[in-house]
Image 1 (cartoon, one colour):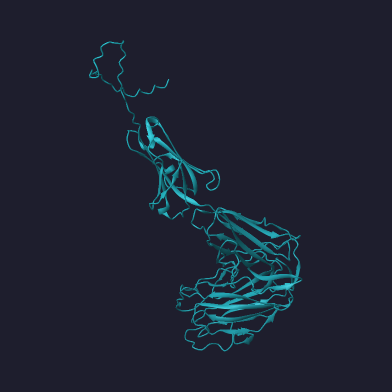
Image 2 (cartoon, helix red, strand yellow; image 1 turned 120 degrees about the vertical axis):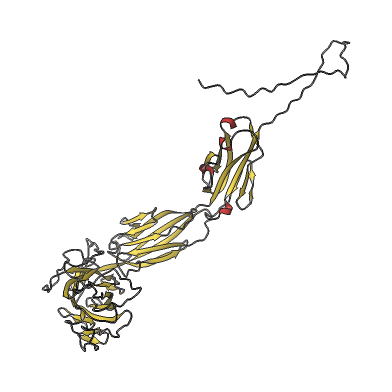
Length: 535
């Protein structure tokens, strides 16, 4: 923790990964990582573990005014490599604001000091947690030019052939002492938990993963071979104390995850699909990841056993595209590609969840493949409307129907309902051919005739041909309102005609009055008979 007034550092987010400071009973936990061991785990020769602390700098001012020191001194930027039971240290700060000069050598009584003692562990089973060392934080109030610091732990595992040196980066929040009584807790986090170096042994490839810390008493000289609880990946520590914790790690087999995009459907246009990914281990290639894929494209990144990774396809925001398939596979011992049954595939969420990735069934073929299949269905927007030219029947007394053709598209899709209802207004339907029909009800059931054929137009003014009551709706994007089609049927009251002819039937030679004889008559229009009342 820093003494005196705090120095503001904008935009420095804390990495929530593995913290190097721990105060028993006074720790803040935000997440856990605990890979499950493989039942048939192989013994791995770790050899002698050597470690050093290196490259500590202030985020804003580097080494200027921050009094950064190392012990035992190796170079200007690191301690020497040490092995059990020795301790590598790095420190920063000065004990007083009036002290202008930095200590000539590291002083764990007056500087904020982090020490690391490599464990004497020489072997472990792959995927099983083992102690890699003990961390000690000498948390003294100090004055510095920075609030945030970064640094690195370098380790060499003697049981592996070169390259066998791994590194883990950390960030320290040296919080200001603003509340009195040595307030407030400092915080250190690892910003990567997975080594970037691949370690090989016995034909297998491994990565070293830092799991986290288990608090121990300062009198503990040897860390337990297995953690007594779940190692935590974030801790805070109280000022003015020493904190001791055992740091646990595991050697996990290296796998790969390949995300594949496939596209099916009717004449799908070219488009790109966006993906995001997350990981429970900081530093994973899948942590806070983004990428895009087109049809037939793929994205491959490394994946470690014990990690939990989520891959999510972003909803394309176009109802013509639907995710119709999501399947993940791996290789079994015989080299056959089989379903990865431990993966949870959620079509509705467009997400594959790879929980606690197991060791590969086939060490020679450790890859996992998740295939996202999108189906393209051409769509149109259709509205059916009834227009009445004469007569008292209201338009909503007609049920209007558009029935899609049997063959795709649109696979027999149908909309039907009274004119003006939501069932036949701005409906998204598969593009294709539709038969348009109408049925009158009530007062519209008789006495009305359709005037001409249906008339179909887009909102943009384009006329769509109607042949024999059938219209073909073109593909339109969900956001293209000018392509929305409206089909209108017009009806009117039925109109008839009356012709009266006069024929005279008289005996031969009878007087008929000649062609000038006039006959007169009258007609009376009878109202429509009311429908009988139901009995």
